[in-house]
Structures are given as C-alpha cells and as structure tokens.
Image 1 (cartoon, rainbow, N blue to C red):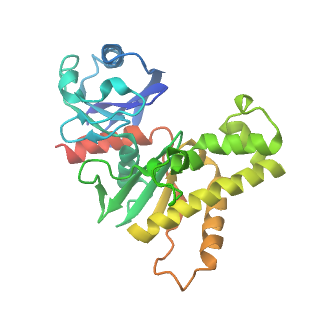
Image 2: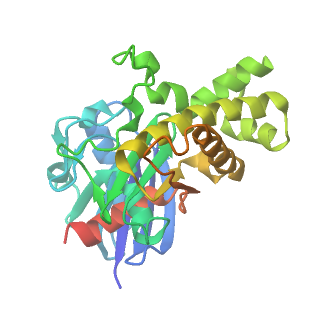
Length: 301
C-alpha cells in the first residue's frame, strides 16, 4: 500500500496530508498560501513535497479553486489566486516533482470525497453545496461527478437571486449566503462590530439561544433554502449535502431542514418537484484532499 501526498490550496492556507489508498492520514500540516506570484506558489509546493522526499510518495493529488480541466491540469480561472489563471499547472509541476500529479476543483473534490466515502455513496443523483466565502458546489449525476461542458458546473455563487436584475453582482447567491453575510446580519441585529466577530462566535451565540443570533440564522437559512429549492426544480436529486466549516454545526442543518420544509408547505401538491434529503457532508477540513486523492486514483488511472 503506497503513500500519496494530497494538497488543498485555499485562498489563505495550503493544507496537506500524506494518505494511503484508503484515505487514511498519517501526517498532515498547513502553510500560508502565497498571494503574489506563481513562482512563489511553486516554491511553496516544492517545500511541502520535499518534506516527504524519503517516504516513497506515489503521486501528488491537489485540489484548488477555479475552473480547471481536471484531465489536463489547465486552469481557465483560479479564483483569488489570479497568477494560476491560464496556466497548465500539471506541466509546471514537472519542474519540481518527478511523480505523477493531478488537480481538481476544490468543491468538486469535496463532492468526490462524499461520493467515495461519505453521504453520496448510495446516491444516484445528489448535490453538494459548500458554504464559505462564496458558495462552491458540485452535482452527482448517475453516480458520477458532473463537471459540465467547460468544467464550470456547480458554480453556485453566481446564481442570481433577483430575476429583475440578473446581471447585478450585488444580488448573486454568494452575496446573500456566503458565511460573511451571516456574520454581517448578526452584527446589524445585535449592534456589534462585525470586525470583532467570526463564525465561531456567532454560532456560540446561536447555540446559547441569543435572539439576534437566532434571527440571523433564520434569515440566512431562508436564502439558502430558496436556492436549494430552485436547484432542486432543475436537478431533481435525492440528497443535498451541505459542506464548509459551518456545516459542522448541527443547528445549521436542523434549521435549514425546517425552513426548506416550511417554505415548501404552501406549494406542496402544486409544484412538480420533490424535496431532497438535507444532510451535512461527512468530511470537514480533509474533504478536498480526500476527493483529490479519489480523482487521482479512480479518474486519472
């Protein structure tokens, strides 16, 4: 059984782990993501790889933001890391490693982790919604990850929430249901300074039953529920799995389930769709790395 180095590139940090072919982690760590240029990024990745040079690593499997051709390693876009846009990272990685390399979009990698060992194992059709700064996503169709015609399927962040202003970035779903919007809403309701708040603090107050925090969560879940119901009308999936750091909070998923059910109640019998089962994704911070490994082992071989 060989070892594989998995790397998850985020806008703030790069997480990495050594896993075996069953996604069992033996070593893991993280470092700061370079924000200046590609050479600095490649040097950082080289430094990570060099830590395990004597371990017999079989391959490097990466997840990263952006619209990525996961078969070739070409980045059409790269989210906040603009220096990777227009780059074939697989070719550039040959400059710093001698083992095989693969890369997959981060939200799609999270969905692959769920498909492999999580909530999508027994599901034919499902959607994964990853809540963070924006809203990442992916779809499982006929038991496989659906990437779309140009590798852009699942870019939920840019869905318009206002049909009368469909091209307004002010009214895209990420602006309503990025995690920062929950924090901003709570700050306004409570009179607190949003700069002094974060998700952990807000959920501590939600779990403590603070009225302003509960109201902010209700409003947040209302927007999230409307998006899920709209996607369901198109996709007709069996299950919707909610990922991202805040999905580890049971109160979020419980509230979302209730709001979806209540929102749908007045339309029940009138609309042709059925509601999906709503669950939390099984994997937390390791999801993208697990999915990246799945992509290498089962889609690139």
